[in-house]
Image (cartoon, rainbow, N blue to C red; front, side, top):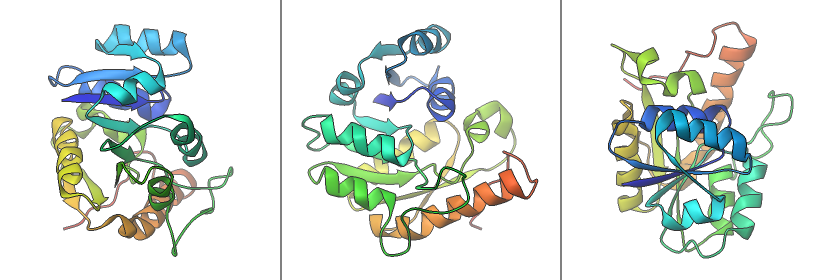
Length: 204
């Protein structure tokens, strides 16, 4: 499987580190060439432009803030049939409120930009710290996976399993309207209520 990671910030870096050694071919798409080069050196990933990485990948992880993901997709070219993973929480600059929610979602807004692609919502209820397998050793950590295309959902679930996460199939993409507020709650608990970056929801 070829997996593109668009963005090499905290989440993008965490995914690259977690996928190293799994057998997946990892493509880093980033504007920060120096940071991407160092991450590639550490993980064995390949550095490309964001558009090149997306074009070559089977699954594209948008490790970007919501607004950045919108900007990227608006100029990314033909993404017909691509599996795009939206990990964003559409939140305000102070991390305290949603800018999209309840009657729509970031994932649905992104899907509207690229109707021929398959957007899947996943990983938004996890802090970057929990993407690292070593941190999760001996623990079951779940991620919701929601999308309208069964094959795309299956591929993203496989990515989750590759890095040791347990996917919870969460229905159609419109259910991102409920998953994103859960991500917002997680931010509130972890960042503002003192529970820290290892807090995550569990669906038993």
